[in-house]
Length: 119
Image 1 (cartoon, helix red, strand yellow):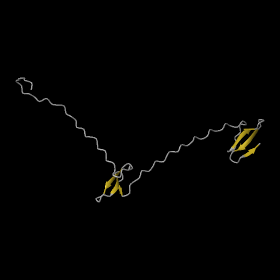
Image 2: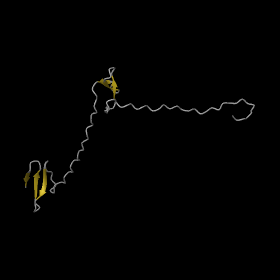
Image 3: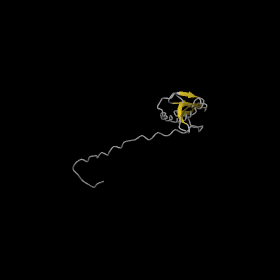
């Protein structure tokens, strides 16, 4: 009420439209057995009340409860060993051999695969 007199016909002032937002979906109740099911599976009841399991992704049904398969742990692999510096004589040695120095500085060769030493 405005207690106002006017000659023109009153108009209805439009109210801004309120956008209706759907409520968020209700979370599914936990399955009756209380155990966690793998993603996509849900526990349902047959007409006689017996639980069975349904996978909405594959449309598969089964009587036995599906289990969560543990993800195998990622095995960390050590980086490859650093290559050994070339032997002092500068020649290429066969695989497994390395050049070492005796106490007097004389070079000798050792094969780590066969445990063979050669002067």
